[in-house]
Length: 162
Image: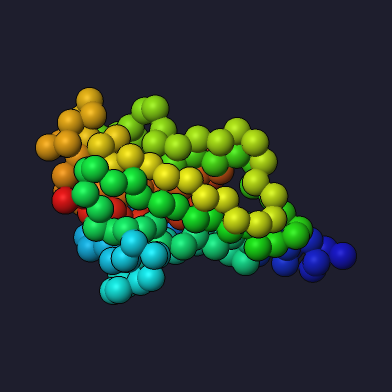
């Protein structure tokens, strides 16, 4: 019984350590992006983009947003799929960073309802990446973070606004 308890505890610590490492990588500067066309087909892949956090491995799939790159006059589409019948997601928040590195408020997208198994889609206006809705301020490479309602990171990736 003690062996089982210690084993479960060590696995939990390892999973927490993996989550901390994942989040540390997420907060690094954006460097590259997964290029997608208007249909969501990947044209070139950045291996650091849209990975799933250790807490959500086997539970969630995040398709790379499309199109990417995007212009300021077209929406970028997101698809998040809950693939496990065992776990739902308690809310969803999508944010980016300000130039000073802090998370931008309000979120680019927020959903307070639970995401059950299946596909959730939404769009974001790329102008929201910029300062005070400025198209000029929106241009460039932006790191986007996806969190659940408990502020646990699910995934992250980069979007290029042209």
